[in-house]
Every structure is written in C-alpha cells, then in structure tokens.
Amino acid sequence: MPAKMKKILLLIISICTFSLSWGDSPLTYTEFHKAYIDIPIVQKALNSKGKISKETMSYLASETNPLDVKLAIINAIGWSNDGSKKSEAYLNYVVKTKKYIAGINENRLAFKWNATADELIIFAYIRAMEDYFDVTYANEFAQLALQKNPNSLAVNLISGIIKAQGLFLLNEWCYASAQFNLIKKNTQLKTDLRKEGEIIICEYVQSMGANCN
View (cartoon, rainbow, N blue to C red):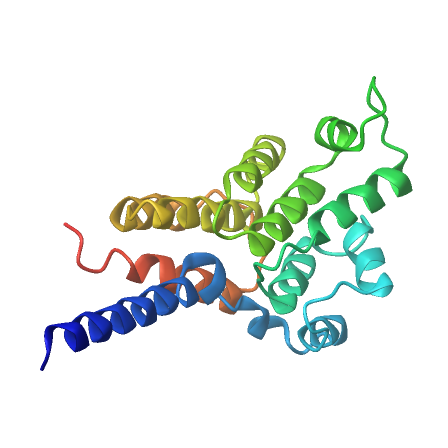
C-alpha cells in the first residue's frame, strides 16, 4: 500500500476512534432514564428532540417534584454540543420564579447564593450535558449541591458523573472509577434514586476501571 494511502487510512481510523470515544463517555453513555420510562413526563422528554418545553421547565423548577425524576428528565432530553443554553434558561426561570436576588441583581450570582441543592445539581447536570467537552463550570455547581445535601445518593451520583467526565477528558479513567466506587461503598447515603437507575449510572464508570490495579 502506498505511503500516502496508509496516512489517509490512519487518519480515518483515528477520527472514527475519537468519535466513538466521545460517544462512550460517563455523561453521554449513562442512559438511566430507562429506569423511569414508565413516567409520562420522562417519556415526553425522551421525544422532545433535545428541547425543554414549558411543561418540563415548570416540572424541573417545582420543589414538590422528586429529584430523581427531574434528573431522569434531563438524562432523557440527552446531551448535545451545539451551543444551546438550556442551563441558562433553567437558571433564569428559577431566579424569576423564586425571586432570588443578589446584591448587584445578577441572575447567576442570585442563583448561586440562593439555590437549593436540588436546583444546583439540576443546573449542573443540564450544563454538563450541553457542554460535555468542558465540565469545569458544571462541576463547580455540583460541588455546591453536595455541600448543601451531602447525604443524597442522587446528588452524589450525578456530581460523580460530572467529575468522572472531567477525569475522562484527562484520561484519568482509573482515578474516575476509584472515586465513583467510594460513592457506591457509602451506605450512609439516602436512597433517593431507583435501584435500576443507580446500576445504569454506576455500570459504565466502574467498567472504566476494570483493568486498573
């Protein structure tokens, strides 16, 4: 085979491998909404073509709705990397609805200072799913959610996925898996997520460390 053809073939292989690696990452591969597909609003989210409807936004912002279903909705809506600003739309909706105020009347600060743990982790998860190449900002809010509700299994697992994604980007697969195992071993966490959903979330991240010492 001519040298030029070999170079072209190697380039094609590398591109395909890169694409597959991004398709199979902690954020994009854990489809735990499948454990909640019996819930109508999760079904609607799955068929939403990546958009958040007014009904869904209202559901996500309501304090009376369970956190695990809200997270399943976000998971069902899915990931993207098209520059969409669903996270900002959610943040602004919550700030307006809850009348959160910051000293300089800036929505991001008002949200960051006043949001509940549920609101923080929802924002963090939406943000991470719409920009999975850079989860630094999402992780910041996920950690704030953990500080406010450290005993929630749901909060720990979603923040764990976001953190694992960041480590995945750095090729720190073994460390990501080890960190996730600490969550699994913590029997003191409040079980606020369906068991099937927990299994789906943990399965991929733990498999990343299958060949680690």
